[in-house]
Length: 78
Image 1 (cartoon, rainbow, N blue to C red):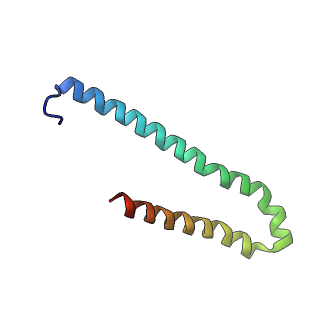
Image 2: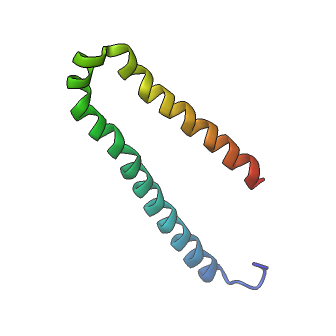
């Protein structure tokens, strides 16, 4: 399918894809940082009320759930 593309066209398509991928990666990083930032504002007061053990387990549980969903997602892609 790409046999009929010239080198310039191929480079143009490759650059557009790299720009799109970079923008997607930046957006993903920013969106995944917001829950942690919001969590930090409330963690101090919550640790006084509920103890630190639960506040440490909560993010670990979230990372575990995220990893499980990523594995399931990758399994269905291939």
